[in-house]
Image (tube, rainbow over all chains, first blue to last red; front, side, top):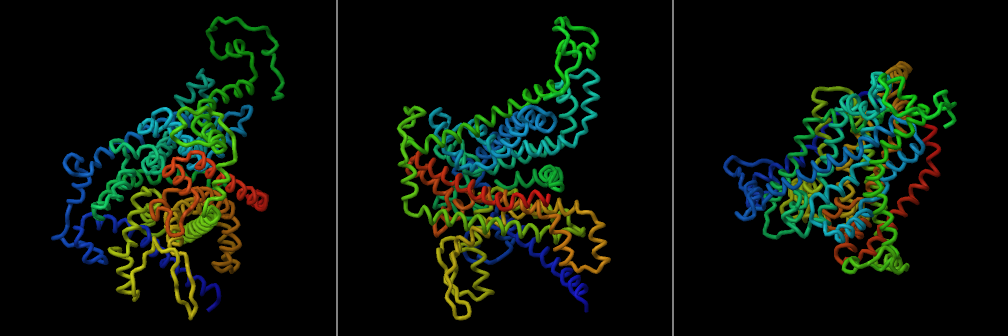
Length: 288
Length: 341
């Protein structure tokens, strides 16, 4: 057997081994999470190694406990879901408002300082969120905005604007100039051109960016912990779940039900728009 | 901006009356060259974004710098002006405090391990999923789950699965791998392993946290490397195959040079992100058992002691360390990267 034949065969097998391994590490943890969430706690403690749940033991009690409001003795996650949704949607709106004009300008127009400004937008990436956390924490304390969902959305904009500009810019450069020129010849002002021609064309990219921002805001934990910890009524789901874990009397199966509740909206969104999202995120990567 | 001025520019200011035909009239009303007009429009469009970035990012960072040089506790920050007494006390406190240097070392180990691990795993995954097969689309989507799922949820799954009391990993380890005692993955600072008569201590909790980070972020590398792989022209590889190149040779001499720029970029990006990572470590171990990365220390300064000044100083030291590392990287590899791309 020649070396080439040996290698072809070896990698032919190795490929399937790798694929099986990848399925294992990516799907099993999520299956495990779902599984534990529908198990009674004592069956978990009795047999921690089992990978299924019998029909007799199957229970939704964990979910009712997590979702029921705190007045009824539950954990009140419905309220937290509402908070998370408000913060995330607010963040998407604010981020797109802030990022769209900037992305348009640096992808299309040559102006004094354009290179420096697009470099600045990328450099923002370099600053750790912990570095931002300190002054924002102080600012919030000073303005009495700690425990405000709108304040939190504004803070999230700092996290999402660089990504949004990057994704939008990569898409906008692919729209041919001639379309814009045609609009200008028809008497559109620059602003009209953006609103009536560019934005409709960039709709897929706007959606992808918006979804990605939504995910970042939904999943965020540090700032929610810093700003909202004192006010349980304002907690996001991430924060609520982390605080739930600190409670001693909460069983692990309830915790897993909470994790499922936190994960499902993101996963649904992601699978609905997977192609759009991955293309939006990696646009331009093949030219790097 | 040395575009030659058009005749419109030399004309005296046109009257402000709105003329009927829009096209011809615009030049008269606004005697600007096209490039100057574009420059103005550019500035006008970029300014809202610029203001937002200035207010939510740049100004807070500048304020951190100021705070780092002041004695600032959260209680007296209400009445404090922007410029108080300047001192280096915070930095002394940060550098003198027990465990600062070891925490910096831990951060570095954690960052390097997680960066290389996630990019390498992403590369392997991208190569394995390169050729189409049934269910590839679904698998590709499923592989991104660790990256898109909320960190709090996945951290709890790992914590539960690794738990010594009710975790599946320890149960299976004892049942199928013959472990004598359950292993506390997330709270063991040093784990002694016996290998060929040698006793080696490995930092188990730190390795577990690194493994978590690799697992969580390999999809990111996978996505970018796969996108780049799809753009490699088929002809190149066909030719090499005809010439009798083996798969490893084709990878080494054809694919790798094409992928190098994107791999280098991913390494830099992941390094920056991981260096400042807070939530993963905080949720898994709370910074205990030898996993006290610097970002968790900033949080501790801020919340357990309400010492804003010290927290700011610590965050600043972290940012400067990162910039020095990046500076060194670009000094040595920056030119090479440019050549290759």
